[in-house]
Length: 222
Image (cartoon, rainbow, N blue to C red):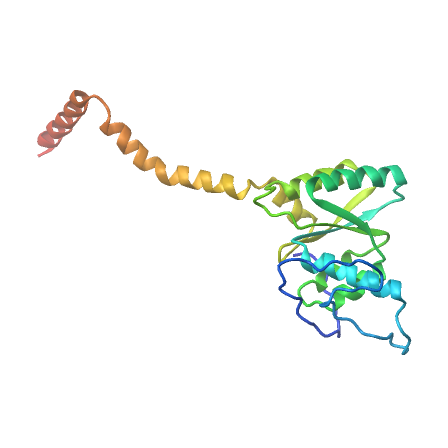
């Protein structure tokens, strides 16, 4: 990985292994497993909206298998509508974020700390929990949407538990899906056996002549 590692003194609390993400219904409701400090370093209470955003970002990062960070450059309303529509069709979503709050979420996670350098300028997060079985081309499809919009710049992200830089994501988008790889492997493994069956199914007389010719050659050598 080419991410620059940042030092952090924040403690780590393991995320929940719950199979489905909690649902945030209001700014006063937060996921039960989002670890956070109750007060600022100056002893003040966090604003409710900041607490809501913290829990929302925590949920998106920890409970989605795909999480990409992108820079956005003055997207107008119509452009945002088009991007959201295209991503929604894939089972993904884009959220404009406050970098300082997402940084606070990332600093509390040992496994995701190296995502912190990606939060530069105005950024958004693209997230999805669609399985590979449901859409084997999810990474490729999302990358196409990002590349199609010149005001979006992919910074990196994570897939499952693996951190990815831009080059990793581009390589992953070009890889064949798991089902295709399995088919190719089965084909390679079955090729020698298929060749033997093909030989045995040939005209028996031709096979006998080939064996006799081979025996004659061996006799000459002896």
